[in-house]
Length: 179
Picture 1 (cartoon, helix red, strand yellow):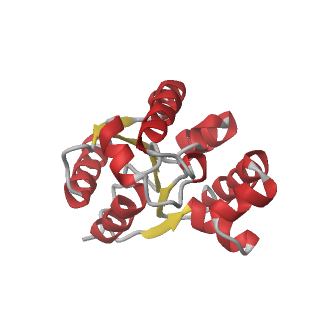
Picture 2: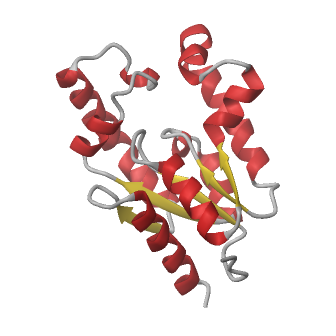
């Protein structure tokens, strides 16, 4: 079911492990839009995965690549874009997202994040035991929550929702806000 009144671009922001990719795929199917994962764009451009980029080139290099990827997405006609967890750190990313689409913050509590971000593919949490991981998540959340809040048009606590429920809630909010 394609909705003609939907935002041209829908950006999903939030901490690593909050479900941006899964929700984005689901939402794109519901509204009939293309799905883009900004991390996948970075990996494709570099020919290596995010942990390898962090290990070989560092976070600053990754953030430069992430900036380029998000700048490319705003040229798209219609898409749902899952951003990396730290995309909101760069004010240019936030400006691009807010200026070209609808930004939804998928907010989750630290326990949800710790459970879902412990897959070994998260370079900022690599090699940590459960206690260290939770401490790092708390510190990063304190730093990033104000950035997510100011970047977003819509905030949704996803801690007790399925990806489908989240996608429906975002779709409903976009329809409501565009009438």
